[in-house]
Each structure stands twice: as C-alpha cells, then as structure tokens.
Amino acid sequence: MNPLTIILCALIVIGTFLFWELVAWFTHKYIMHGFLWIWHRSHHTVHDHALERNDWFAVVFSLPSIGLFYYATLVTYNPYLIAVGLGILCYGIFYFIFHDIIVHQRLRWRPAKRSRYLQRMIHAHYVHHARHTKEDCEAFGFLYAPPKYEPGKFELKKDRRETQ
Image (cartoon, rainbow, N blue to C red):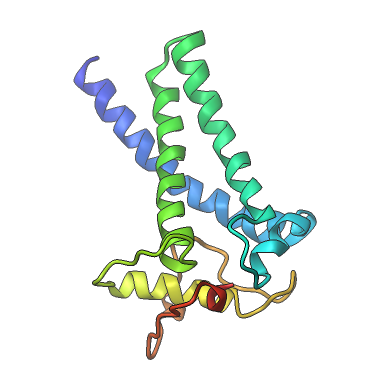
C-alpha cells in the first residue's frame, strides 16, 4: 500500500469517527427519544439488570461496520471502505468505554484523573439522565458536550443506579 493511501485511510478513519458522533447525536435525539423509545426507555429506568433492551442499539450500530469489513475484504478489496468501517468501530469502542464503563459503571472502572473535558461529558450525561421520560431531555451527545455543561462543582456518582 502506498503512503498516500495510508494517509487518506487515516483521514477517513478520523473523519468517520467524528461524523459518527453526529450520527449518534441525531439518532439519540430523534430515534431513541422518538419512535424507538420502547428500546431506549430501559436505559432511563433504574434497574439491576446486566443487560437492557437499549443494548440492541449497539448491535444495530455495529452492523454498518461489520458489513463494510465484510464487503471490503471478502467481496472486493477496498482500503477506503475498510477505513470507514474502522472509524465506526473506533467510535463504538470509545462510546462503550465512556458511556457504559466510565459514566454508567457497567464495569467498575474509572480513570484516576479526570480532565475538565471528561468531567463536562460525564456531567452532561448526568443532566440527560435527570429525566426519565422521552420528552424534555437535553445533552444528546456521547463524546462531545458544549461548554454550557461545564460543572460548577463536579461530583461523580458512585453507584450505577444513580446514573440511570
């Protein structure tokens, strides 16, 4: 593979990753809090289950990446489509670590040091989960939160039930 292809593929991975945050924001606001609230409601409900109906979204969001990897490697080789699939996969990994592990404590781990960015993201998600209804929610992003969500005094919620 020539160096230009490698650079273009790296740019495609980064661009796809950034674009996927817009896809996730749109989907979260208009689909999860819209006609598929029947799945997403489980995520806004306090419970002790290991899995939620909302977890089906992870399966759905992984399908484009899986399809691109399959098509671009087994049907016809295309490094640019592989790069798009990789960008989606990277977004999914970051989402899982931030959302499911750091915020909701589905696995008990948090970084010892939390940057202002991470505190703002966590706080924005807490604001989002302050409502347990389909309507009147805010802060729909997963990896970006506007500066208005900068917490005055940041308090990390320790118990998973507090984050739902």
